[in-house]
Amino acid sequence: MSSAVSAAGRSTARYGGVQGGRRVTVRDIAAAKERGERWPMLTAYDALTARVFDEAGIPVLLVGDSAGMVVYGHDSTLPVSVDDLLPLTAAVVRGTRRAMVVADLPFGSYQASPEQALATAARFVKESGAHAVKLEGGHRVLAQIEALVSAGVPVMGHVGLTPQSVNVFGGFRVQGRGEAGERLLADAKALEGAGAFAVVLECVPADLAGRVTETLGIPTIGIGAGPDCDAQVLVWQDMAGLSAPPLPKFVKQYADLAGVLTDATRTFAEEVVAGSYPDPDHSYR
Ligand code: KIV
Image (cartoon, rainbow, N blue to C red):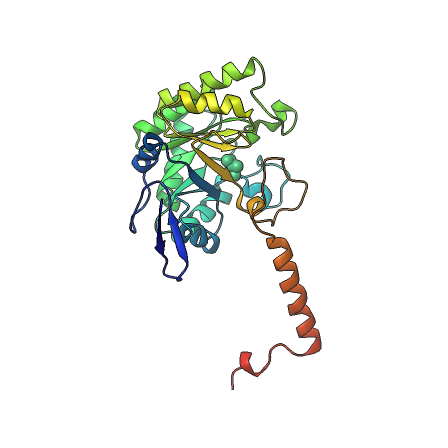
């Protein structure tokens, strides 16, 4: 990691060993694993916040189907469509110069067949400029991953608590406890074998995530998977204190954006009512 100063004058950290203005690639991600370097990933859904994260040095941004919840206000990721995510992904690509932008394939847009997965991924690459895609599942999506990788689309896997299967799990619960841990490890290995360049481990016991990380040659990206993963991801609104509680145990809030925004909103409203905004400094002569 090293430091640089962004166009906005803020000091930025560089993760994943990439210097200068070029985009992070799957080769950088692989090299970081070889060097044993940890790196951060965040979700992003619009150009302005993507730019902030890019300038702060976040090497990989995920346009997650969590947009269903934090952007569109649904109570799960299931209603999200390709048409919902395409414009958000395009905005995140436009807002960044350096981060690799990964688009989540929504529920129902890849499970049916490798052909369906390729048609969906091609839309993300061509219409939004995504650099890679993510899909959920273990053995059941291997054919999809092979088809995408052989067509030239880098794929990030996702095992453990895969939110698109919330109805099968009976809720958002920790996965991989007991014997299920061996199945999860086998799934993760199979994703690597099929050509995935990284794998998200969501809500799995920390010791299991450590074993998977040690076993795989590709990076693991933890979310609720303890400290031993190669990378960590959070939904940015959770990380920055904008999401409404209750939040999962693994979420750490690094700011109180809801508080800051509430104060700013109240002050704006009070000044409008009092007639003190706009003042001469904020008016045209
Ligand atoms: O949709 C999403 O945001 C995700 C991450 C939480 C990994 O899948």
